Image (cartoon, rainbow, N blue to C red; front, top):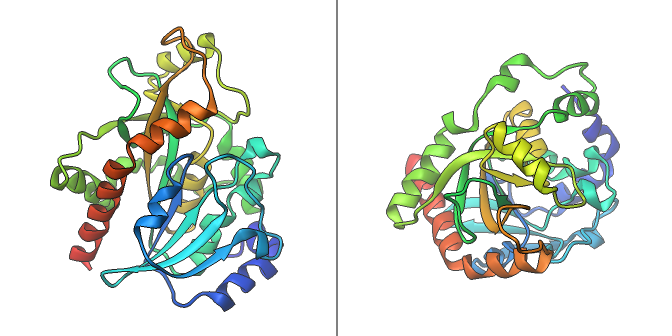
Length: 278
């Protein structure tokens, strides 16, 4: 089955497929401030998205706009160093392009990472949260329109992120690396502005532990395309109203930088878990 994204970005996808040195087992989308993970690996090929036909260029600090093809202990990985956001003015189709590229290159799994604001009072900046579920009140209709299928398969809508093998691999990796990883619900906000304290209270009522402006649409689309997703959030700040501090993007990137070693160890151990099961 073809989606609207394939039709619109035929030339973009073809351009990447022609340059790719290999098919991939896994894709990783690196969120705000987490792009330095790419420098811990040795890519076989790196592509600037600005040089790829019709590929949306990220305008956000902490998103370098690179695609890296990496082989790690025989595991073939596609790293997206930087993502495409709604709040940059891009369409949903453009935001979902990385997942479609991963699918076209053969990825069976995708690790989706992001920076998020902590709503749960037990969470602190610098924590890593494994997303067990998400709240996305308005995204499903928008994605169904992108798919051109009329609606999303009901089975896909009901899948919880916490039930996959990939989720288990990350939890095992946390044990192996002695990483105190949180588990919780991610509330999707379209942005571009940060949420108000009143909105955060509303989200807490709905059971949210963290809030961010990305990832959920990528996870939903991954499931639809037969790619198993897992979401990892770096809690980079307290959400609005939790403390008296004002929110800023610089705080997001600074906190993410402080946890880069912990983040690197967790991801590489997750890779090891995947390799052990191949």
